[in-house]
Length: 272
Ligand SMILES: Nc1ncnc2c1ncn2[C@@H]1O[C@H](COP(=O)(O)OP(=O)(O)OP(=O)(O)O)[C@@H](O)[C@H]1O
Ligand SMILES: [Mg+2]
Image (cartoon, rainbow, N blue to C red; front, side, top):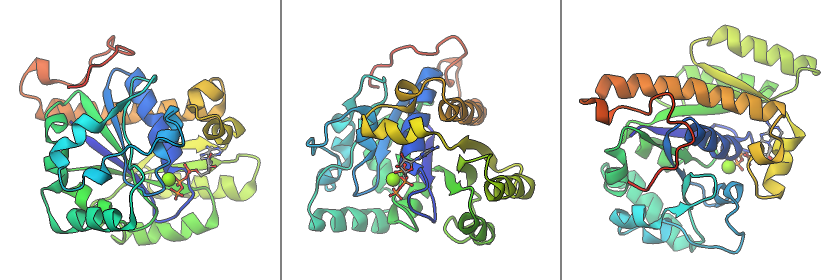
C-alpha cells in the first residue's frame, strides 16, 4: 500500500481539508483508504463527521503500534480514519520520540495495511518540519506539499527546491485557494506551474463551500458537490490515483495484488 503525506512549510493552507477530501475521492475511485492524523489539533476526523467530543485515537497507544489497525474508525464515506485522539502533553512527547528514534515505528504500526497495494494511507501532518515528516520517509511516503497562491508561498518554493523541509525527495505540489479574480493569485499560480510543471499535481480554487464544509462536519462533496473545489479535488485525486497505480503496477507481483482496476469505483471496502 502506498502512503501519501500532506504537509507544508506553512500552516493554515488546507492540508487537512485536502487530505480528507482527496481520501474520499480516492475511495470513490476504488481505493481502500485509511486517513491518518499526525497533528495534535486532531481535526482530520471532523471532516468525516466524527463528533467533536469523541477523543478516541491511536496516539494514546504510542507504545503498541501493532494495535493501531484495530483503532481505525469506519466512516459513512467508506474511508477508515485513524484520529490522533485527545492525549496528554506527555503522550504527545512520547509519540514524537518514537517517531524520531525508531526507524521501523510506522512500519510496525501500519504493517498489515502496507501489504495491500490496493489500499492507500493518507497522512495529514502538522505545519512545518514535524517529526512525522522524516518518519514517513521510512515507509516510502509520497509527499504532497500544499501551498497557497500567495507571495509567502512563492517565497518558500526555492527553499523546497533546495531540499529544506523534504530533504532530497522532491514533493508534489498542490496550490490551494486559487482565486482567479485576484491578480496576485493568478500570477503566483502561473509562476509555480511554469517553474515546477512536473511536480504540480494540481490547483484547487477557493470555494466558500469548502470553507463551510468543516463547520457542518461534512466533506466538500456533500457540502458543495458542484462547486469548484469539489471539481478540483476530484481532479487532484484522479492524477494521484494514476501515479499510485503506476507505482503499484511496478511493484505488484500478481494481478490480484494490483491497484484497483477501472470499474471497481465506489465499491465498499472491508478492513484488510
Ligand atoms: N479551497 C478552499 N477554499 C476555501 N477555503 C478553504 C479551501 N481549503 C481550505 N480552506 C479553509 O482554510 C482553512 C484552513 O484549512 P485547513 O485546516 O485544512 O488547513 P491546514 O493547512 O490543515 O491548517 P493547519 O496548519 O492548522 O493544520 C479552513 O477554514 C478551511 O475550511
Ligand atoms: Mg491541518
